[in-house]
Image (cartoon, rainbow over all chains, first blue to last red; front, side):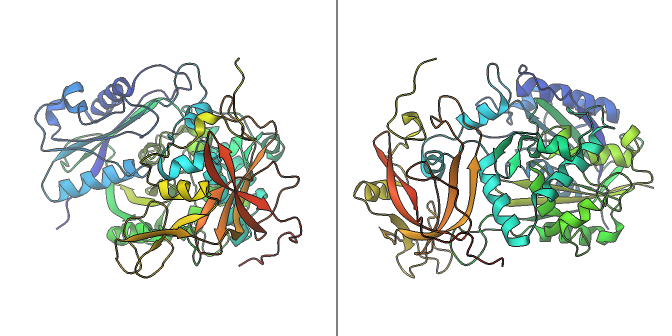
Length: 384
Length: 154
């Protein structure tokens, strides 16, 4: 017998492009909103999972949030950390804990505040990373921030697959089209190819508009096995999967990409679904090239190249596989895995407003971490 | 705005790696002698990642850092347009190469001097060193005789 585990609460702060507020404060607000959304109180919660990005801030959110956030005694408390894949892994962790009886109702919260006074986001990332180890050598070679590493990935992937800058452009403009209908998106102006090409290059082939928009913000979801509690629209966690491909930087195989499909295969198998059953794909898209790569890697294009798939409109409004329907991390907001997760919950509840995908009941949610070293996938379905 | 003091064409001295006690100290020690010293499995000779502790081929935990060929081919590359004030002193976009060395490792580097033209994936390079804050850093010398883009799509 399988336990009916569902996302029963969602809370989101404003996604701010301005400095100010610490992660703990953002987390407190998101958790409060999620509890109110679910009609629950702190006393109903027996599990807390926290996530935060490493590196940029020393005051990152941690397990001390149990006390800071006003929780009582808990049966499950962890700081989950597999880089960008963390938030999707948190929901999987909650799902497994509930299924085994280790917890009943689990709050998952991720808060990040990379924007600090006096610096742009790019500058903050450029100054982080230190001067030791492999990263120290890379930085001494001019690899500042995360854009140049993903530019190397992009160049290699495009060289091997034959993908083009036209494909990057199509991915970026299609994702922007979705953002127009999302009040929470940080960029909501229409974008065409001309506008894309006017965007300054950061690291070839990536332009500013190929890169995610970091924000200060937090999202919390409440995962519960209590079928009598929570929001009226229960979003069931039907399946989850992981893959952590271990690649090495040596001749004989690709170093920058490859792997991840098993996370999706396992999540679908647990759900008893096929790719053709998916109404939505909400993928982690820190850079336009990543979405293209994941569409192919996860087997979502029916054997077509991702560029062809996207250019023919399949991922856009009215397409066969609406993808990153809130504008993703590129045009919506970059709050790591909470971006695709929150959008999936909003769509499956039917709360997508101008961007709602009519009749959507199932979604694939994907998270990646590191240099595409970690993949976590969920299959969600709105309970009938 | 104070001027950035550095001898390097690209970066400020403040980005010089902290060598003492660093996991990559054998690489920096070798670079100071003009050698490209990299980690191999002491048991089966597999080229290892710079921070690898155990060989994924044979399971051995002993690592042999030794001089490797200073030649290779460009595996990927980008031209970095964003130049962070205070960290980057170059006034034009600069190259970052991922070089697949003939000894089997892949190593990220920039060039020893500003390149006259941008190379392409598949071009051959030689590895030399540039000085950053007293530390020698592996960096590429582009071969002007290499025909561009010789590697076929795979």
